Every structure is written in structure tokens, then in C-alpha cells.
Image 1 (spheres, rainbow, N blue to C red):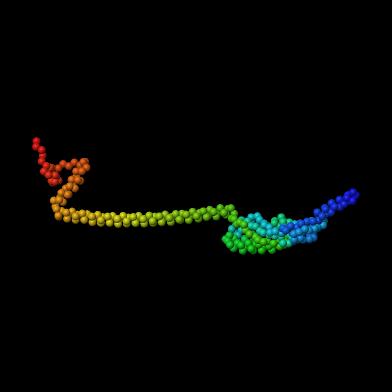
Image 2: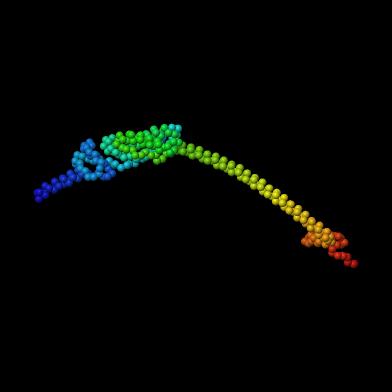
Length: 289
């Protein structure tokens, strides 16, 4: 019993010492072993490691590629045009000891990097005109910015992988002015197109009216020619018929006159019985009183 009472505290003490002396470095981390705040050992590879309990402590630093969203920054281009630039960066810690000594932790590192990136954005983009910043040449400027930021980030044990612009907008006041100018320009173009359309419509309409007039004139001319030819042919036929049998021709014309004058019932004629008009009705004698 006495032996058990002695061994139990020893076992518990060994367990406690083991618990506080063992630590695991994951694949995504790198570690610095500190003793009273001073770096003693750097661990870059994952695995099981040991430290002196209660004397040493471990600081873990992420070794993955990290993203940094910087706050939007107003940039004044070389042509005095203002632009709101929203950028981001990707970085990783390549020297954990220098990183720990210079910035201490990731939060401070992000703040320092954001300040450096915005400063370099203003310096580099401020030397270019707005048209250049909105064109394909912008990638060259971003490479210059990345190299410039990288030169300072190495002092923190950080490597800048990339710096990019997510979005570049004009300030609201400038956007409104540009929108109004674009609207005015579109309205001017619309009026010009309408005027051209109206001019073309007048030209097409006048051409169509002219063509219609020509077609009608030609049709009337052809119809008059055909009518004249028909009248001539009719007169020729009448003349030939009259020459062959004058009495029959006179009878035929009289029948036509009767049809025109007497059919209808609304026309009254007062003629003498011996009128030439009734010569084909035979002898008409008045009744005796």
C-alpha cells in the first residue's frame, strides 16, 4: 500500500510532465520553440516534438499561402483622374524566425502588408494615366507593385506571391458626371439617327410617289391608246357594215336608240307619230272620232 501511494503521485507527475513536454506540428504549420520569450528552436517539418515543460512554449505559424484583402484606396492618376482601387494579395511566411521577431503574429503582419500595398498602389498607379490603368497594360503595373512590396515584405520573413486589383471604380461624383455625359451623347446620336431615318423616309416616299405617278401615267397612256384603237376598230366595223347593208345598219342603230331611250320607265318623250324616230314601228294612224 505504501508503495502504491508513492508510485501514484510519481505516475501522475510523469504524465503531467509528458503532457506539457510533447507537442505536434501539423502539415500546415511551422513552429518556434521559445524559452522565456527567446527563440530556441525552429521546426519546419510536421511531426511529434518535445519541449521543456513550464519553461519553453511553442508558437505556431501558418506556412500555407494566405490571402489578404486590402481596404479600398483612392488613387489619383497622372491625368488627375480619381479612381477607387480595391486590391488583394497572396503571401506566405518563408522565414518564421524573422516573421516572429519583426511582426510577432499574423494579425500585425496583415496590417503592415496592407499599409505597404496601398502605399505602393498610390505611388505606382499615380504615375500612370487613367486609360492605362483600365487597359491590359495594368498587369505590368501590378508586377511592379508586387516586386516593390516583396522587397519590403522580405524584411518580415514574408514572400508576396501575387498582387491583383479586384475592382477599380470611379468615385460616385465622377461616375454620375460620366453617366450624364454618356446619356447626353447617346441622346445626340439617337436624334441624329432619327433625322437620318426621317430624311431617308422622305426620299423613299418621294421616289415611290414618283414611281406611282409614272406607272399611272403610262397605264393611262396605254389605256387611251387601246381605247382609241378599239374605237377605231369599232368605227371601221360600223363603216364596213354600213357599206354592205345601209338599211340593216340604220335598223340596228335605231334599235340601240330605242333601248337607250325607252327602257327604264322614268323618261317621257313627246314626239310626233310621223317622226323619223318611229319609222321602224310601222304606220301609226290616229283613231277616228
